[in-house]
Figure 1 (tube, rainbow, N blue to C red):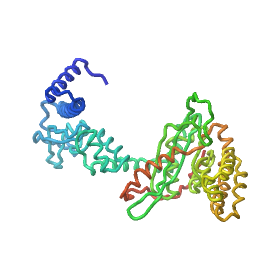
Figure 2: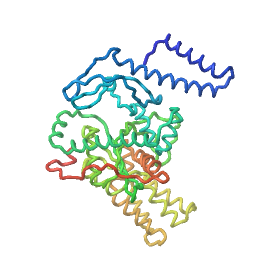
Figure 3: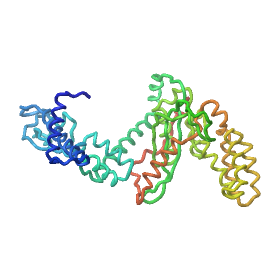
Figure 4: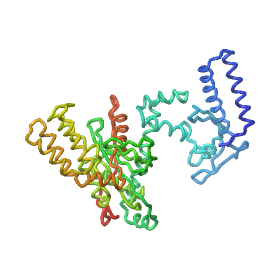
Length: 435
């Protein structure tokens, strides 16, 4: 955005003079910055008012066309309020009333898309971001600290829930289109192939609702890129892939049963055109519901169980059998983790079986054996790494921590499920996993 240098210098000079007058010659950088912020805010607020009012014709029409087909008559100039990032803006505009339908209107409001008394899209977006990140009360406090005016908790809630409901409606439309065979046929005719891989990860975390705890299911679509080689030529520790990094991450989440969540998985997959890529790759933990949905909707996708999640089954076995942080535990844990890293799953299973008759570690060994047996085909880690796959699901783990743990499990929070997507219905002749 470009501004006139001459005008900016004039504005800057006026601001400096005003602040200097208020400081009365007392050099105080903190006070200087605070007063300058407040002055700029007030100047911008007044400027916004003037800019809006200048958008109205100086000599307006005596009557304008109403939506009902009749003419609305000029009544008077009336005041209105708009909330912006500079605070409350009061402005004057011409007001008309239709005698036929008795509806009032303001051409100036219509011109700018203003809804008097509401927030501008810029302020609404900012409040929505804050409301997602922290509690509504804390978001209100942060907004006041940065914007220099008070925004109520309910205003933050309204904007945040508004964006959430809008996104839910968008996803509902995606689901409807993803299950409409005619829409899919039209879509397929316009597809263009894209080289490379696209990744997806799914996970769940239980969150407190008003009357019960339910699982918040989360999915993300993303790509993976190679980072520049580090100047440190030492090999990274086992389990780390420092040369790979997720990018272009898109998250979706909802509180619903797995089968219903599968519809969202399928719809967002089509929305991201995953069927145009050379390969679709899923990296997740070993939860049965996750791989059931992958098999159903994306049967040809490459399936990888997160290495870190898989390795966590070994630690309680070693700690229970040998004692936590003891010398005998370390060799066994190092060997089994190495076997797992290299994709030698049968060796890992065999190492766990040696504790089936050892009562303290038996239950942990049984869980590990079941986990590795059920997911063996998804644990060929040596081959996956050789072929350049990401084998960690940190992208989705981070989302669950941020959304579920940090936001939805904050102290005292109990959440309503105010919007539900439609229940699954038969798909007729349409079959998921068509590519």
